Length: 313
Image (cartoon, one colour):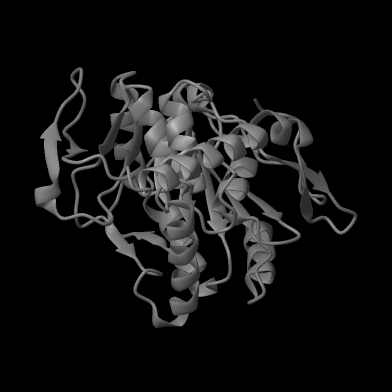
């Protein structure tokens, strides 16, 4: 699944320590959010890790800040993209650069305030092969989770309903990553790739667990008035892909459920390192040939069924 991806031009990529986590932080603007997110990783993780930041072509000073952080050693790897490709593409790139025992996607607006937050995630993930991913209860209230312990695992929570796990904070073992492949890159910059990953984990019969701590920290970007336009665009794009019957998310879920598309996801875009040190991407034509035609056909079938159901009998 991995390939010899691009490397930062001025330094080798730092490797993960034994038993460690590939922590890939996906950033796009919101510099102050990024500062706080990275500081909390270094200060409070409580578990060996390598910290990689993939910058989605930020325009607010993030690039200069990350260059300084790399020079100081407060981050281990920095990769800058030529344009904003969204969190799925960025995280897939970060994960592909550093092999590790665990893989965490962390968005640049998740700030932990508790110690050993990463250690607790890894302990739950390692407890049983039945556990597909581990998150924190970022969006839901305590009454929406069920306490559980699987195969002697530490105490954890399971969702009471099959809503999506929060893509901005999801940890996987290397074995689960091999089984599930990549984040789906079909959805563009603000898509429901977290819902897609959650659906594939469910389809594979794996559990989506949560650390039982509702005082874990803050989702600081979510309520920030400065990113109102960002959140509006994100919600609009997600609604588009999840629209009834013919949305890309709906169609992919039908393909997974019918065994017409593997649960182990391939990459849609292939990275290329430019002369300026930034990473650009090209569409994988083989991927498009395999899945684009099938998805288009399924969308047409679903649209035809909807039209037929609306006709008088």
